[in-house]
Image 1: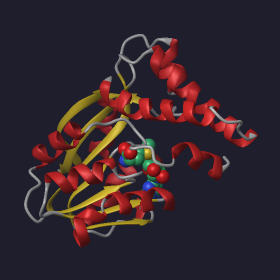
Image 2: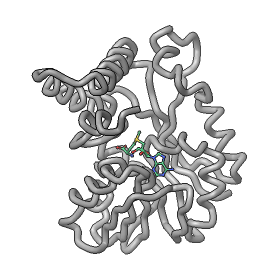
Image 3: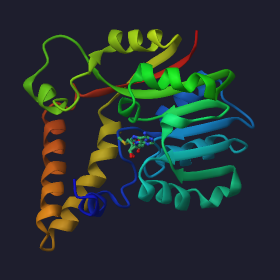
Image 4: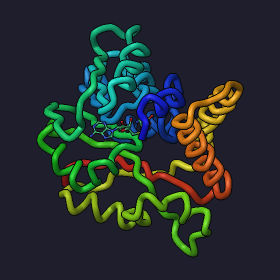
Length: 239
Ligand SMILES: C[S@@+](CC[C@H](N)C(=O)[O-])C[C@H]1O[C@@H](n2cnc3c(N)ncnc32)[C@H](O)[C@@H]1O
C-alpha cells in the first residue's frame, strides 16, 4: 500500500475503527479502573479513545502507542492539553512492559491475535489489571453474502464463543462483553465518507484513487448489512 496515499485519506480522521465514548465508559466501569490508574491505549490510532480515557479518569496516567508514527503524533497533539500524564509514541503493542491497571485495545488486537496478545500482556498487568479489547465477531446463523464479503480479509473471525475460547486459552476469564454495532460504525465511516468526498473534489493521483476506491468499497459493504457487522468488546482478567 502507498502510505502517503493512505495517510492522505486517513489524516485527521477522528478514529480508525468503530467505537463510541460510551463503549470506553462501559469497559472502564466494569474493569473498576479509577484514581491514579496506569492505562495503556494499545494501537491507539489517532487517539479518540485516549481522549475519552483521559477525560473520564482525570488522575490516570496514560500511555498511548501505535505502530504508525502519524497516528501516534495525532494522538500526542490531541492529548497535549492533558499535560505529562498522557504520553503517545510510535511503537509496537507486542512489547508492552507496564505495569498497567488497564490495557485498552480497540480494533487492533487482531494484528497480534487474541490469545497471543493476552499471553504477552499478562506480565504487563498489575495484580488486579484488566484488558478491554474489541474484536470482529460473527453474530451466528446464516451469514448474508455482504457479511462474508466484509470480513473476507479476516478468515480467523468467529462467533462470540470462539472469542471466549481464545481468551480462555490465554489463561484469562471474561468479566463482561457487549456488541459494537450500528452507531459506533457510523462514527467511524461517516467522517471517512466526508473526507473521500472532499478529496474527490480535486483530481487525484492513481495511488490515492486506489485508496479512495478501497475506502468506498468497505463503506458500501458495511452499509449493505450494518445490523450484521459487529465487533465484540470484552473486558477480561487473568483467571
Ligand atoms: C483499526 S485501527 C484502530 C485504532 C484505534 N484504536 C481506534 O479505534 O481509532 C488499528 C490500529 O492498530 C495499529 N497497530 C497495528 N499493529 C500494531 C502493533 N503491533 N502495535 C501498535 N499498533 C498497531 C494500526 O496502526 C492502527 O492504527
